[in-house]
Image (cartoon, helix red, strand yellow):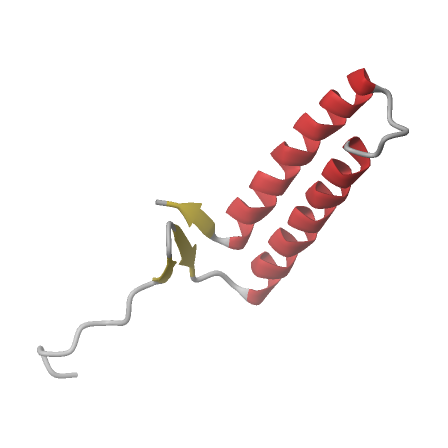
Length: 77
């Protein structure tokens, strides 16, 4: 390895997001958590959901969605 070459970066930049290199298992688990979070948010905005429950479900959904993205390696710059 010559001293001129630097190792490839451990992340990819996509607009305001950084996508870190993660194992396939962690990426799939993060995607699964993000999907569950999105589903909870979708359930929270359903017109048949009681408004108080909708706020609670929405908060839980956002929490799970953000954690899923974090586990999958997505960071906001």
